[in-house]
Length: 438
Image (cartoon, rainbow, N blue to C red; front, side, top):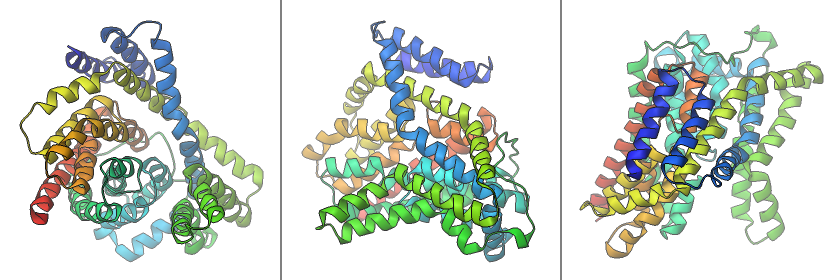
């Protein structure tokens, strides 16, 4: 019965948004309360679940997304994104632009969480698309596919890291296997798949392109790259310092503090305000006006992300994920494939890749005890399942839709299909690798 209720709620949500044209934030609120009532949650618990879902989701994302949007707007308006796009255009050329974007996403995606990477790199996508006069989806999907793959497969991202610890996996081997699986997934779901979307047009309401400046007014390529990718450099370098000087408690704690995404973004904004603002001749009031404009652009996106977290919280507190897992454990399937399937269905219901992966971990853990399963590959199998078919209850779905200016149908045909390809290619690669390691 609970599974049927989840299905009805997801269908209702899709119909409210696509057919009835209800505001997405309101649709999530209505469906979340409806789900809570149908699943038997006591009515006096519903308000607290709504508050927790909204607060927990935005609490970890709102600062990062807001600061990232500010940085993105400044990168665009200062001409830094234009400079980077010009260099990419000259180095890789028109023919290989999607491969250049995929490579950028792969490198940046190693240390950077998906949501941070998204808002950081989106202005570069806009600039490259503008310079080449190409559709945003065609240019942006390869980069975002790489970011998503790294987020789902490779430590130190939250879900793979937690899974590696819980399954007692070897972090170095998990990272190596994850990269081996990630490369074909990124190529096929990125540049290759993007080639089929070259005619998909969009109408973005968020303008991160900025004004095209004369070449002499652009910042240098070094300043542009360092300022745009500073969070990556800060987090990557401090993580290395923490490893090298792990015996020194003070250095380790300080490096850990600076490597936190929020702290890294605050430092980045402070530095970029000077390098891309004041140093380029802009008054501080002008830079602050750019930041204020960036916040206005993402206000509705933040509300949609928070409301998606409400529905996720309702499903978790009513025990739907546990019921679903019990049913699936009765299936007679190979452990790695079963772990992928359980996580994929949880992803469909819960939306969040991280939550789906961590929820599945407790369900599939007994498989490790009763079967000769490689724990490193189990981490990757759950990771692959956690990327399956991102749809309307996933915050990344709405980030992609709103920034790219797509309809819900177009987002399904681009973003959702890309995530599904990544998931299928991932589990196929994992099963092949499992046979090779035996």
